[in-house]
Image 1 (cartoon, rainbow, N blue to C red):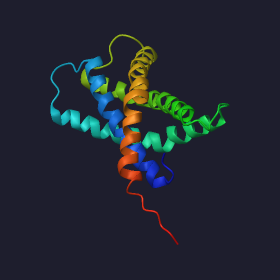
Image 2 (image 1 turned 90 degrees about the vertical axis):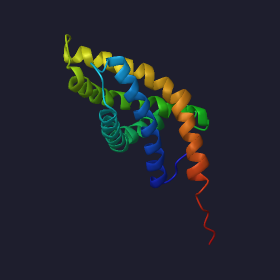
Image 3 (image 1 turned 180 degrees about the vertical axis):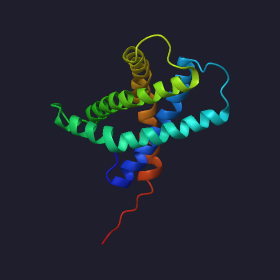
Image 4 (image 1 turned 135 degrees about the vertical axis):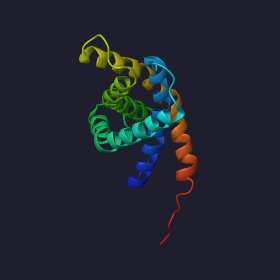
Length: 161
């Protein structure tokens, strides 16, 4: 869908915003907030989460995911294959990194209790992947592609020499 760096940034921002909003509330529910959380705290977490997710997507996961997808042996002429491959690699990469952010938020709200760091991380990773992958494939991916096509690509002017 995006063909230029600017479009890639816009698409990434839209995708990150949607995923961060849903995943932040999902993690608050799954991990228990340990008491009441104020709207201000949630907004701060959303902004910080969005900035971190966008930087990770732009600098690490996005470029790596593209290299992996284009190196895989499958029919790249079919759009659906590319969408599923890209979504899969992006979700795995983003969940890998953002689970550390989720653990940091868990620690700040009610601490990390009991198990080892690796066990807690693996648990957080699995829970986040179980939510993020279907969210990306079924809801956020199609929604962002629709909005991107409707508003960003529609406004793209064609210059005739």
